[in-house]
Amino acid sequence: MISSNEPPAANGQNKEAHSAAAVALLEAVRRDLSSASLPLELPGVERARLDIRNSVAQLDDYILPRYRSLDAPLLAVVGGSTGAGKSTLVNALVGHPVTRAGAIRPTTRQPILLHHPADAPWFEDQRVLPSLSRIRGTVVAGPLPASKSGLAPDAAPVSSLVLVGEPAVPEGIALLDAPDVDSISDDNRKLAGQLLAAADLWVFVTTANRYADAVPWKLLLDAASRDILVAVVLDRVPPAAEAEVSEDLRAMLEREGLGSAALFVIPEVALDRLGMLPAEATDALGTWLRNLAADAAGRAVIARRTLNGTVKGLSQTVQLVAASSEEQRRAAGLLGDDARSAYQDAVARILDATKDGALLRGEVLARWQDFVGTGEFFRSLEQNIGRFRDRAGAFFRGEPTPAVRVETAIETGLQAVIVDEAANAAEDADQRWRSDPAGRHLLGTDDLSGTSPGFGDAVAAEIRAWQGSLMELIRTEGQAKRTQARWLSFGVNGLGAALMIVVFSMTAGLTGLEIGVAGGTAVVGQKLLEAVFGEDAVRRLARTAREDLHTRCQNLLQAEQRRFLDRLDPDTGAGAAVLAGHAEALKRLAGAA
Image (cartoon, rainbow, N blue to C red):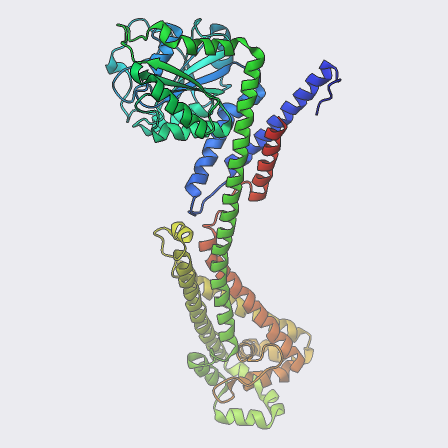
């Protein structure tokens, strides 16, 4: 708080510092709001997206310009329902036709801002309503036929603001004739809402037979939430009904928190040849506006009151957007978890298939048996492992092709397992996403229930790379055993095939090597490797090979799951916590004022 005995200079410096801090906060809010992304189709997300667009527009059109120029003239937006007589009222306030009024709907499309000539610099630049270009207008002389009262509803959206310097408008306040709030044109309604959101005060025009309509009251309630100064003009009131209608409207305003709104009644009278109301019909409203304009301190109070109410409303909106952002984060997390879980389960199933001997059947078993020989070979191996050592070198020198066939059979079998489980994971993830509205929207018409194109080839290449790394393990281990280097030079493929067989027969994790399937098939590979490298080395080689295979399978399936995860936008702009912090800061800013 500023002490009452502070000198004026210090007081002014504190106000400037406060204003600069407020602008910095508002600019941060604007930046983070505009960057906020709500990509998932969740309940209420369209409302939140609209809130973001409207809030950013209001920051640009009104809040930031007003904070930067607290002494700028007040902007009074004249709004209301279709045919309520807004343009006729504006013309009456300045004493001659300056805006178009007629019977064709929509009537007012091109917004016209009337200001005192001395206030022109405040409006000629893009200080307020920067998205609308400026057109310097002139006062219209003579009546305007109804056929020129407006463009067709499907005409191009209005992107400009006509500025008219009018001496009859009091200095310090400007009048903006806005489109109909209930126009049949979507663009007209959006523009009317944009202009009303940029107002310091509203002059809201309705009629004796339409003052209870829902659309105007929705906007009036918004005005009440912003604590904006409102003047309600009840137009075309039959003299006999004036007391009853005025009393009913005043009671409605009281019930909805607008009891302080000024109420002006314009009787139903004939217009002259220029479409003008009698001057006395708008005397009360004109006097009210001139009194506001003449009181500089009062204008400042009105500007701050509306500004603070708007900032308070912005705080509530940003808090709602923060909640929506958090809902998006949670929903995206669940969808991501669904996809990751499906593929993690597939990796686990692949590894199970490589441990339980399932791969040592069919073609792999046949090729391995071709490689190691007949049943007598098994028996001789079991009877005398030492004699096997003497025969192994010749065996491998003479039969390199069967070893390669074992590798090829393992590649084919393992590829089939990985591709099949990846397809199962894709189908699982696709079904989980399609059971969720947000996931269903992200997938659209794309079918991700199978593997991606070229996945089978990628799997085959990765298996061959794994086999190559396994051969390199054999070579590296053999270099440490110089007495057996000759065996390695002749039998690296055979030893590699044996190591693959051992890897695929490990049914108890890393606690031991067990006999696989098909009558002790794997024991041959195990015995051979132990004879060459020793039992501990075989365990280490098998563990390293299995871990390498595990990593490669994970990488393959993680690449596949990216098809789902890439649809979850990782860059959602400012997070919920940042937005919630902004909401609290805005609340404090409004409260401090």
